[in-house]
Length: 624
Image 1: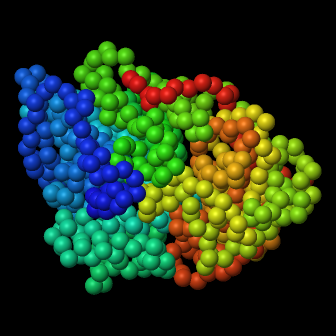
Image 2: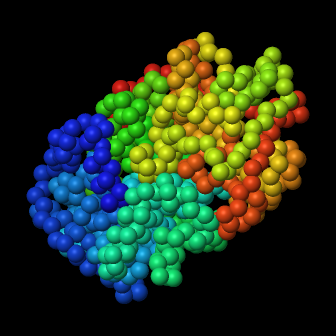
Image 3: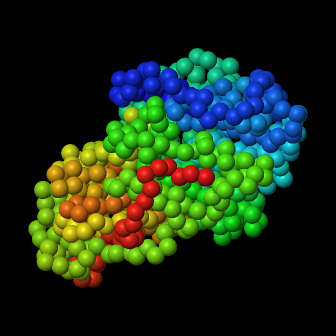
């Protein structure tokens, strides 16, 4: 996110370390032995005649060497180096690889017209085979990159180019509808609108020679808080200029709020059988695509196109946000930053080891797969497993209850493993959800930097005083408890609306009252049974909702308490549900709804936690 990150990195100097340290990335530490030369704007002709351009870095060696390819929409000269993310292309090339950084169609110096996802499967295939034929190439190609640049890898891999030998996607998902643009039916407002304005829309306009429009989109995107209030989304004004739709992919995304054929044309999850290569993936507990990355890890083990692919899947999950994983100068929410160097991402070193093994055939001891390296917060240590969820996970049910009312942290909402315990004297808890005044997002797993999109780890106590948040808290734990894996809330609820949302957030409460968010989830009522076939609800009728709270790994220390927040909004991470039951994005009308959460004998609302034994971990990031 070229301009977006430039602004964030400038602001970061005042927030954390000094500019001298910020300028230290990329570094020469770990550089290889090969000297490197660079050629700019090297052309590659796609099957339809469109010419894409790349910067190519060639090592000074007489041997044939593999190619490392990045296909990016964020500018080939940037190569996702900042803020403290990937090492420079020269650094990778110094390890005796040809490195090609290519602008995708309609972005940067490349020809054609940009439309997100649409051309990246065929163009990815053609780019891989072009890279395999570069002068000095051994014919083997690996790919790397983060976010959309991870998507360009997966989309290329699903086209099964014969020269592709391995990929290293970071922070990317399995489906560009659910888990990217939407989450269990809810529109990811704080991610999609700012990203498309400041980033891909602006750069696509510049690519087409309209610098005035590019600058206009960029300046409008500098204040997304104002623009995100615009309704209806189907007529979002920044992307309509002089009556012309200049970002059709945005309006198409709004118009396709279900999991339909539009999204299936791009998805990864239905095409694992076409992917024939090993995958080394990186993601974070507070990243917007964590759930999809884990789905890719498990899906490839079961359905990958070759034994080599199925047997060599590895994922590394750290205490990271979407871009705040590189350190030392990455823009990271303060609590995650405070974890220190143990939380630094090992992506650059492990990627070279991965490519050395699968592209050069080196027997270098690299951990293949299936293999999961994960960071447990609370104890701040790394652990390893051979499966996800971790083998031996026990699922505990914690039942919701209240003696009088669970409204806000001042209420008496309780979590207990005893069904119908002493603090479950009432049958229901109620709150009023007003979409004009939604619950503010404080942290979460959005995109793309915590200073703009709600992500990361923050104290929730300030918002837990709102009456439209139900708060259920356990007693202080007598012994530490390791919660690692996927989390579910089985919620029985009724509403006065025909459609609405229910949100859930898992929180770690310290003895001093600090309440730290671990992860969150949302369920749109009309999509409770199917993401492809919505069904409105009957006002007043009780329904069972299974809310997917995204995974985490956290050690609840002795004396800490487990907390669950239930509400109906999480803004601006998600677009507020207007409660009207109308088609998403088509209207600016909103209605107030009264929500009732049931926890009587017939409706045992519960939090289901994945619990594993407390073990000793490592103080260093994953090696090999």
